[in-house]
Image 1 (cartoon, each protein chain N blue to C red):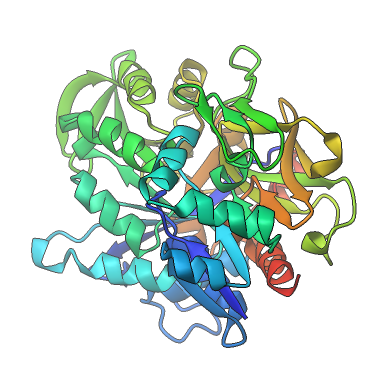
Image 2: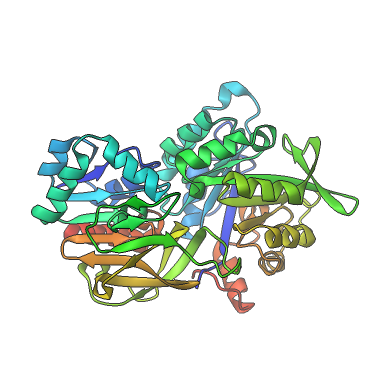
Length: 208
Length: 250
């Protein structure tokens, strides 16, 4: 099996690479590239993302043909794709970080700033928080409800349809922290930094 | 609910842990990677490396340490000490650091914070503030606490928040190394004046000090010697916090 981590200058992806290689061992080949042909021919794609919604979308657009290939992979070919952090947020139609920016539009919804309730909640939301699993998913196989995952973000994805929500976490309100829509998966938290359970989620994705 | 973090910190000099002690099952007490792995296996919420290498020739040793550690630790890794430029930050992130802490360079040139948080995202930029009490105020010191600046710590903390820092690592230079507890007033004052998370540092000698640190409003507590000399394990510290009704990840 070939799994591609999309390298599109979205910030620091070395932890994502390390964790996938740790889980994959020699069973799965992990490719880190922005090469369109390699992405197209791979079995699964991981879309990481750090920094702002706007900067990540711009970085995707800066690589000629990348958005088209990702659309083909996720929408036409319906092959499994995992978005992490801003990688997940970009599934939305629109994001409001820095300025209004159009997203990939794969899962209807918007990305807006977490309501800090007049300073009651510090932002970014940094640290370990429990996830509330809303429904069964292959992504969460053998993951107990209320497991802790590592978060770092100030913006949240608010999907239009609630049935895509796999899990939420409690910070200021119920923040959507994992989604699934057909072949498209995403986590707001960082499985690559979430210790054993995070690695288990990566393992689950590789086995989907 | 968001949990309070416990962050063990390792002082690293020329690629080696300073005064490493022999934990059971540890092949090389001086290897920061092995020590970090023990901490993360024990439930550390994050690992911090502070590079105190003095000479420029040996500075590159930290990159190798970070590279090896990040392949073995799957909790966040923060690296600080001697970070002077956006390029230094870039190098550390590429080696596998998740966050970089900037101290002297942020005082000398706040643009480093502004530029790097724009380039890499606020989530990976930690500004380390070394403060010393002077009269009724706190003043910022640089170069590992040697140089005074005349800058007010509270004003500086607000400024760093505006520059895009994602977190503040606040160390009381009066308490550092004394094991007499965090400077609670300082922690309270800074965390109530900014809207970003504060990591309390400097002075931990007992588990009660960790409790006090969290109660002062800090989101995370950093400690070096109590873990390093084996006085307490991370697990013991967490159990103690739970017994005091402080939410932590168990």
